[in-house]
Image 1 (cartoon, rainbow, N blue to C red):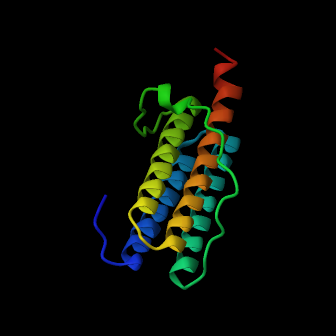
Image 2 (cartoon, rainbow, N blue to C red; image 1 turned 90 degrees about the horizontal axis):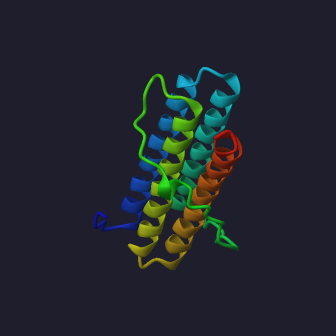
Image 3 (cartoon, one colour; image 1 turned 45 degrees about the vertical axis):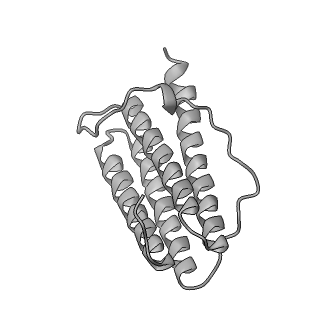
Length: 151
């Protein structure tokens, strides 16, 4: 992790990551040939903008409430081969890519929480880590329901 000098630098980094996640899911939605698949990824793109807004609010002085409980981890993403974005990717590949992305986002926020001495900022990052864990869980459940049951 980078060594930031201020909380604003950490927040700016996280805001940039959320912007990249929004772009990622928007592009992924555009690659899907089935409307329902496109909608799922478009919805995630919107959620990433919600994370960005929360970070901007924190930067403006508001505090994000800490997560009340830890999110279940099915660990499906831990056992799948990495997938590269591809114009011809199918739904299974898109889900794998999304799971891996959310797992990395969870780790990023966990690492950011550990990188600050500001207790409020730490709690904000831990709350966002749990939101990313929820995203990963939703993709894992989708994968379990639609991919593993078909195979």
